[in-house]
Amino acid sequence: MSKVERLENEIRTLSTEELAAFREWFREFDADAWDREIEADALAGKLDALADRALRVHRAGKSTPL
Image (cartoon, rainbow, N blue to C red):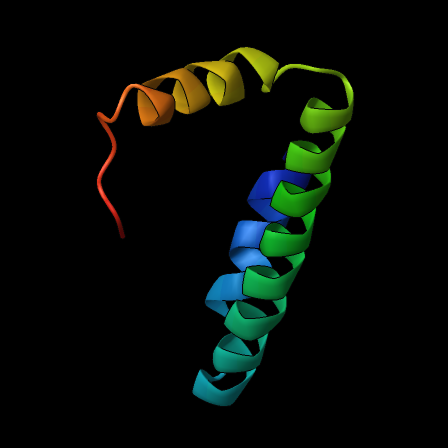
């Protein structure tokens, strides 16, 4: 049995309250992981082309206010 399968089985046994606490913990954990990934990509220059394109579109007057 894989680690993921063991976790799935454990999660299935959680009470309603425990599951709610787990969901909240995982939501925060996942958001933090996503933030770290985006930051690493930005520092590595992986988002530069997207930013450049967005700025070109905006300067050309093709963007709309939020």
